[in-house]
Length: 291
Image 1: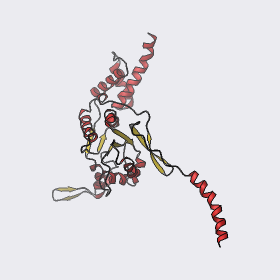
Image 2: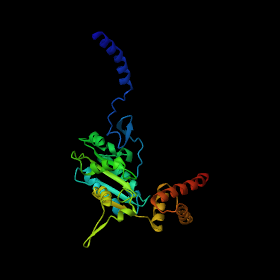
Image 3: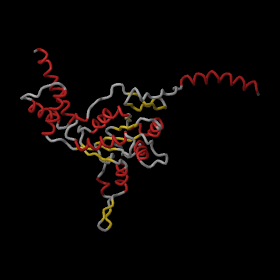
Image 4: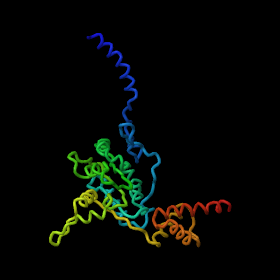
């Protein structure tokens, strides 16, 4: 019996060697001193923190007409970076009004004090426990950033996020918070049929189980920041700021051009103002060069 077994082992050894070469190696440790922003990426069956070599830099001073939201996020982040108690944050509301830019501005201001940002796609939220393990015990302070977040009822990341925010027996790392942006207040679609589940007990209104389940996720964020569409005056003020920041000049045709730009896009927002300013300054640049 030993001879056939020996021959089998000898034949398996080269095969195992080849399989080991095909398996992914250990992911390199992230350099938290050299980089301030990271993305969580899946490579084969493993995840790793991939550094962002050229993060989008924006200042709090560049964000206009969201002063209260800016103050509250800045204060929350300052407490967190200083090692004090702070809340996970949900930023919701109209598109293009500065939700994600506010988080990026927090990184720009607090990165020198040890803040690091980890961007995680919705599909990778199931890996949140692995991300917590990666940063636990580090001196730096980490914000997991989920941009434009929303779920369907059967998506696995939904329950993973609920557990990470509040509910896991393992808890979360003391040096990690979650900042998420969404156009939906409750992060999930809401249907008319769910309103029919509402019950009236005396003078009290009791939402149905489906509604309660959806509300329970957003309630786990300690700080809610709401964003609203800009009116025309706010939009023009933001557009003028970006024209100036890009080195342009607001002339007599500025307001008419800015209004037309917003009408063509059917929206007045900080994003639309930024896009207009880039076009406005870009079109004027050749004429200034010729002079």
